[in-house]
Length: 251
Image 1 (cartoon, rainbow, N blue to C red):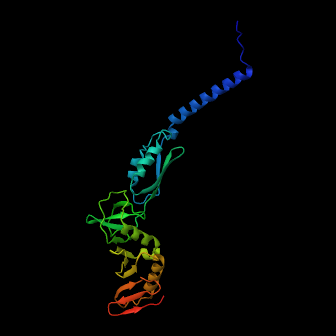
Image 2: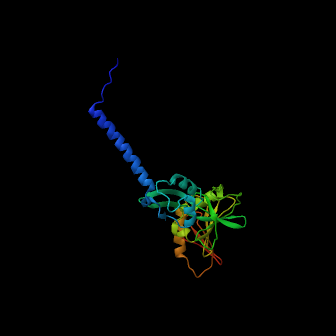
Image 3: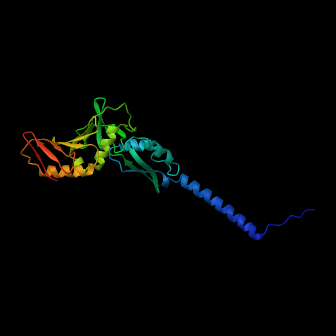
C-alpha cells in the first residue's frame, strides 16, 4: 500500500507565498484598471504646427475618462501615421492621467503646379497638401508635367528630383529668397528671386558652389540698373547681364 508523503514545511511556505503574490498581482491590476486616479484627464500634443490638434486626437482614439491602461496606443499611432504630413509619431503614457502625442511633421520645401492649383511637397517629394503660394516662403518648381498624384504619395519625376537637390544644396539664405526654380528640357537650372532676378545655374553640378557665388554677386550688384540675368553656369566666371549692357564679375 502506497504511503502518502507529507508536504515539507518549507514547500508549504513557498506554495503559500506564490499564491499570495498571484493574488496581490490580481488585486493590484484590478485597482489600476478601476481607480479613477488613472482615468485620462489630459492629452498633450507635441510637435504639431500644420496638422489640426483635434484631428490628431480623433485619430488617436483617445477618449477623456478612459482608463490609461486600457488604451490601445499602437493602433492610435498607426492611424495617425497615415496622415501625409506626418513623418514620425509616438503615443506615450505619462502617469497618472496624461497621454502625450509626439509627432514630427513633414516640412514643405516647394510648390508644384497640379490641375490649375498648387500642391506642397517635402524634401523627399511627398505630396503633403494643396497650398496657396502667397502664404508660404517656398519656391515653385516648374518645367514639367506630372501625372495625377494623391496626398501621401511621392511625386516621381526627374525634374522634381533635380529641383529638390538644388533646394537641398543651395545656401539656405538664398533658398528663402527664391520664388521659382525652373528645370528646362535639357535639365538646366534657372532660378528666380522674389525680386525678379534670374539666375542661370546650368546643369545640376557644383550647385553649392554656384549658390555661394550667386549670393556674392547679388551682394555686389548695382541696384540702380535693371538686371536681365546672372549667369553662374561656371561659378568661377559668373556674368551679369543688364538690360542695357553686359559685364563680367570676377570670382
